[in-house]
Length: 320
Ligand code: BTN
Image (cartoon, rainbow, N blue to C red; front, top):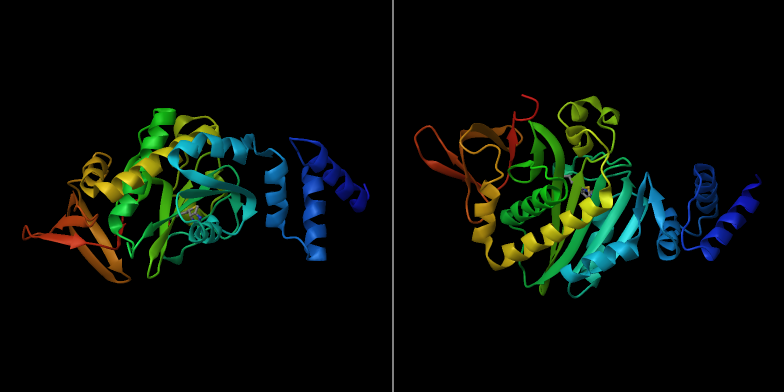
């Protein structure tokens, strides 16, 4: 079909219907045409779709109004869905900086430059759950390690509540199953005189094909659908994870000690000998003794002394 006629048909669909299903061909034509014209970005197109339509991405219905209504009780004011975006982190930080109170949620169907810890690329194909929760706190709250623990705890509790599947946590915030990584958390913050803006990015392999990941990542990763043996409806899972994460974050800001106690119940490495890379080339070893109230990892060295680690990565865990 002539591309102009196709664009016209799609616009008619958007204007006339509450739900919209674009074929791949229609979507590509629109995408290319928007890019050539340089007027409207692909993100704006999807924003338009979000406003006017229910968007279907690989068997799940991403209806932002429905998601927002279910999360209203958890003080989520804004929900945005992008079928495809570089990373949910940037837009989430922008929204959280603009908003005075409450939480915002940015979800992606796919990220083409997903960000992991230490500047790594986070592979985020269709089928996973990739989202960021943004919020701001008064004063220079700053980033503290226990916020990562609180987030991880919310994520595993949300998964457990939806699927009766109990995953584990590896300090500071990997979600794991049988020595394989199911998901990760990236927290970024922006501190100013009056406030600290936080963006809590959560990435979970759910229905996305692990075999499509680069070999070095795929061999240490797994997905929830692989663990349970079938595809998972992601919207209820998302709702439970977001609500549990917000409860956990709020709890962290009021009584951090409780978070740390609960976190220990999911700690897969308690009592094990571990190596932690503090920075490239600098490794400390010891027996993992849980976490401090501030979220630091506690290691007992071979003299029986407890060493506190605020930042670093436990190495030699996955796939071994
Ligand atoms: C890690 O390295 O383990 C952290 C991975 C965090 C990935 C999530 S996916 C949603 C959000 N957007 C990003 O670009 N990164 C985080």
